[in-house]
Amino acid sequence: MQDCLLLIFSELPLADNINCSLVCRLFNKVSRSDTIWTVYLRNQFNDCDRVIMDTVFRSFVTCTKIQNFIEKIGCDATINTMWSDDTLSKGYSVDIIPSEISHLTNLRKIFLRYGNISSMPRSLFELNNLRILDLYNNVLDVIPKDVSKLSNLEKLHLGCNNIVYIPDGIGELCKLRELNLRGNKLSSLPVSITKLARLTDLVLSANRFTIFPDEIALLTQLGTLEMSGNFLKNISDGIGCLTNLSDIDLRQNCIASLPDRLHDLHGLVTLSLSNNKLQTFPPKVMQGLTNLQTLCLDYNHLQTIPVEIASMTTLLHLRLSFNKIKSLPNEIGQLVNLMHLDLANNSLTTLPDNVCNMDNIREILLNNNKLCSLPVNMGKLPNLCCIRIKGNHIKSIPSELSRLISDGM
Image (cartoon, rainbow, N blue to C red; front, side, top):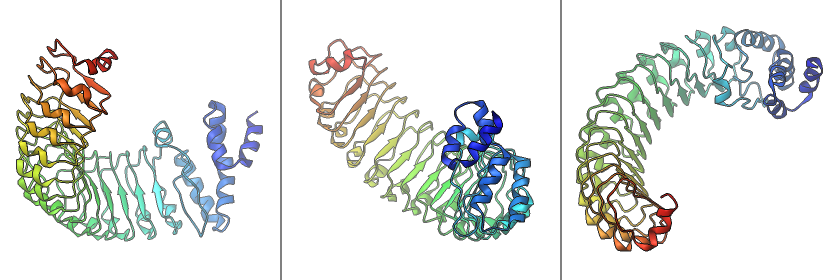
């Protein structure tokens, strides 16, 4: 049976082979056969040097059963992505990057995730055409200084490893646009990182930063900054220089205050500050974030919301749950574009009548507060489809809301 399947699978298109691999254990085993993949590689790379191709293939088969670490080699020959990240994480792991990889001089993208790679061979840095290097979730503890030789690299993803520091050579990657170092052991950045003039995405979440790195303020093309899950206590004023930022993620830190310079980030669309130690939100900042659509301030120590929130008319999502908020300003009713309002687990005793002006609101979460009543006109909100009030002291409900409440809302 297995021999028959080998013959059939070797004649199937690649996509059909992949689909067959999901049918049963036997099909999966056959679809991963060295014999089949030798056929695929030879058919796809018929313009390549057979000796080189066979050498590299044997090396990788020895190390792993991942069949797609190559996307492009030679002129027009390509192999499309064959396995999802989920499948890779369940057993298709790489232990070693063989030195023969240097022969693949036209290689542009490498994805070797969820493996046990502990080092990068020098030959890897001879791949001058490499655009993407993704070694997410391995056991690397060092980024070699030779990384500077990858002069055409645009995306470097080394998240979930054991990296302690970044070499100065990182600054030589003048074409780098994305740098993902999530889930390592970093506590500082090299000064040379400021030379990455094209960097638009920087991910440093789940590391060991206690101080917001001053170097970040000089990365003026940044559009996305992620530093959640660190130990930051504050944010430097330098963040105000990053006027191209659209998304900031600073969740799960120890931030107790925010700089007024956030006011200058007029293009900011998403600001996530959940799980910090904020007691106030600077009114000046609210006035400056005129394009903000999502503001996450849940799990902090906020007691009041400034009236300046009225300036944030572009807000679509406002998360304020698990704070100590006792009342809301009437001006909150000016958030006419708001669709989702989460006020659960606070200390609210009343809601201002102006919440009834938020015609686009779809969901209001009010559970576990100290409310005794709801505004009479709340039931007339035309787009409201979900309201949660469990854990309050409400005795009467506007008739228009009774359907939502009775449906478990």
